[in-house]
Length: 243
Ligand code: ADE
Image (cartoon, rainbow, N blue to C red; front, side, top):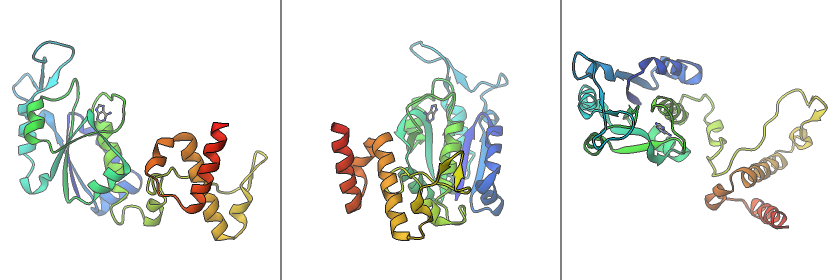
């Protein structure tokens, strides 16, 4: 996969060179090309933004430098163009998986009060927000999106099964996990995990996943696929919650 990023702060993307993603970049399972918007500034004053028409706070990124940055990317490598902004559609695990299947994508990292709407209507295929809060720019959103989509690219995570068990993959949050020692500050791990009974362990994990989702993210339950046992547990949890 080939990911192009247009940004005013290329150095922020150095942080991609770590961990499993860093290794995937070394192997070229994924290629990330960073394009500095400053290379396309309009004049010798380095202009890339201007005051909003109609007045108001802050500055707006101008369409022309962004257009030049997009045109500078070989058209075969451009793929879909994504603008990151708080006005976008909310990012999700489903969206990460969808993006991971594409050969090429180009991500624009906005800054300031946003980018000229005409650039969006003429060049942008999708606008994405990573959540209902405002960042100083799209860079950290881009890092988030690149990291999460890369987990779906074959070879990036050594064990693809672990991606299947991630939170959201089955519509629920993942339950708690434990490792050695068996007792930590007088706190024992749940017995079932050392029972050797794989069916019981699976059932326990399914239940924990449901309980956690019920407590923290009940909104996810609407679309979750539940086993018979989980449905029964949900009824119990719901009736307790009413009492
Ligand atoms: N830029 C600023 N805030 C953002 C957000 N929440 N998601 C994506 N890009 C952003």
